[in-house]
Image (cartoon, rainbow, N blue to C red; front, side, top):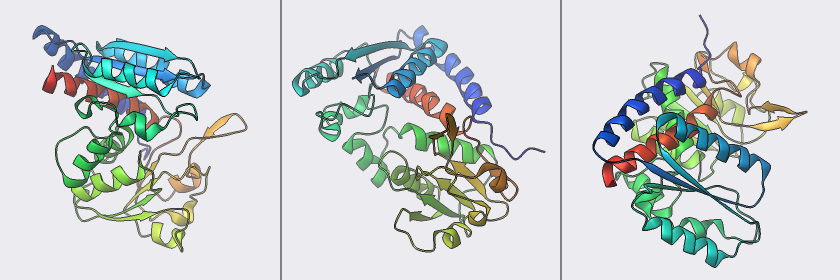
Length: 280
């Protein structure tokens, strides 16, 4: 029996449920709307945005993409965001990152209405997550939690280790694991005895951005291993985990690609539908 967590299949199942839920919303006169702002010409960002457009079309979400020049002024970008905040047909706003270097990402993200922050990156959204108030959960951490739970693993009481302390993944996923009563250790590039700490983890989330750094020595036999890493090596996408070696020890493990990646956009679609249900 395979111990690979199939993110593609899990994502596809969730999208089928979303189609049904969105069809019901439309019967009530509410069509979920998502606006994506893409500033600049970063090739990877362009691919991500196209995938988001396709996802919206698949499940029945109205999507609008605002493509801005790389030299767009902060004033123009913020004016656009304010307009979308007031647009009743738009329930979710996503700022595609990274932004061009002259734009302050944190300042720009703060201009989004927190009730439309379906990417979960506004400081208010982060605060809601920290104190346990209802708000949108960042898409990748939300997808990670789905993947862990898909294995039937009971999170309560488990030792969880998160490698990486980013605002987009490491910090929020640590909070979500704690909310489900795991005992969480957050590690990072300056953590000493990292392999030893990881080897005690029942749940290991690797989000450090170093290709194949996590070898079998880091894996507790039977652990759930979630690999968030995406680094291109010789034209191929590699995760943070040395997959075949880790797989031999893990109880469950996500592949790269095909694990966390497919879940992230699906969680964005789910958050947009939720925004429409709550505020539409």
